[in-house]
Image (cartoon, rainbow, N blue to C red; front, side, top):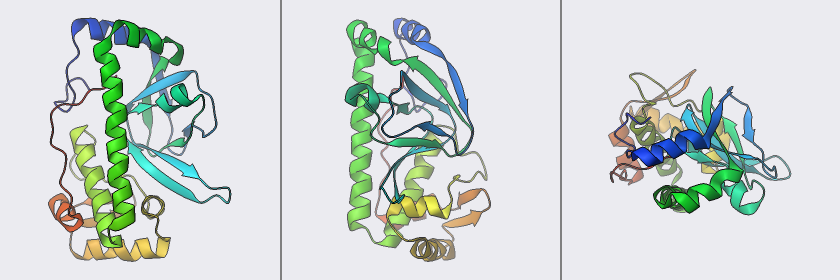
Length: 232
């Protein structure tokens, strides 16, 4: 990950601290729950490889997907602040996580203010993304919502090295429906319209993006091309 231009460099003292802060790595299979809503975890995680998603559920089992996780994303910070997780996290693909002890987080804030600022930046960036997602669900048409979601995921995945040639976004149409707040029937019809425009093609491995520029234009969305972002 440090070799990707999408991420900022560590200073030598920062890299030394993070290397000691890290306690190991965790491999998770697709469909496995990484953290459960209401749970208490002794660990924080950074996604190193793979795809996941954050979601909340109603009592009757209906699910709202809040956001998707890719390399560089921090997992479990909410449990540190709130005492327990307010959402669940599931792996979409095989996922590798970098594991940190939550109890040692205070030493990061006390001794490495630049890394503490990075965590604040990551939290603020997540808030900004959720603002964009809420705007999409609340005000975009079904076609614009679907185009926005797929363009956003494709753009983010390219930046973190997940979109090699002919690789699909590993989501089902049910994932898309649960993200957009649409029925599966409405979602299927909407995705067919995007496919008819040759923006996407659906495969057994997920959604293959054929024209990410066309998707972004259909959504009226512009990627965020600001400089390198941090990770822990």
